[in-house]
Image 1 (cartoon, rainbow, N blue to C red):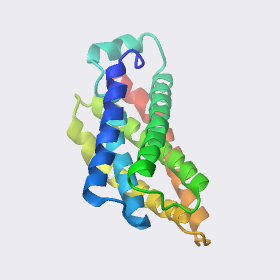
Image 2: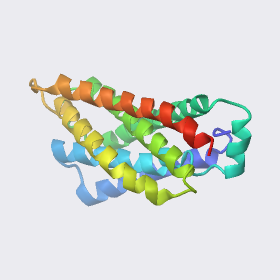
Image 3: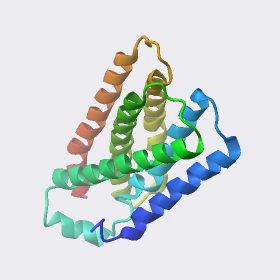
Image 4: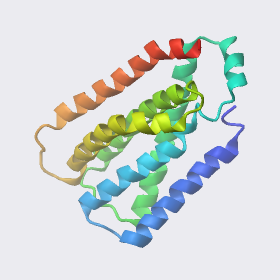
Length: 203
């Protein structure tokens, strides 16, 4: 069903392209740390405009129909899987556009690509979980914004610090600790979604 709504996918691609172009027009080709910060801010905006709408765009009557077909955990995990794949693709597109327009200050390209994939997983899990809560709370988008700030801020800070390893040819102390913390946070968000969503589903 998501694939049939191709206008949504192409709309996100257009948003990514226009965002990177505006960043290029405003900053040119910045130095490494600024490049890193701009990349993750772009990923945040992409997640808000694509992944965060995964539940909010569903009509309440359609939820009732899904209720008769699948288990709530299966539905949530399916939404998360789709959101993760979508963010994977958008991350690769963003990296390619950043390479074309904003330069390539990375010393370790493979490391940054892996970190961007983990970042896609993190942002997708958080915003899908928040979207599910907001959708079952009378489509309250403000609730998602209120809950999202304390969850997304540490995720972005950790991702930004992890990505600094790809900008530097030297070893950065504490890198693996940050990676484990981020993966643990992702697993916690997914676990909370699996536990809480069945109760929201029944409302």
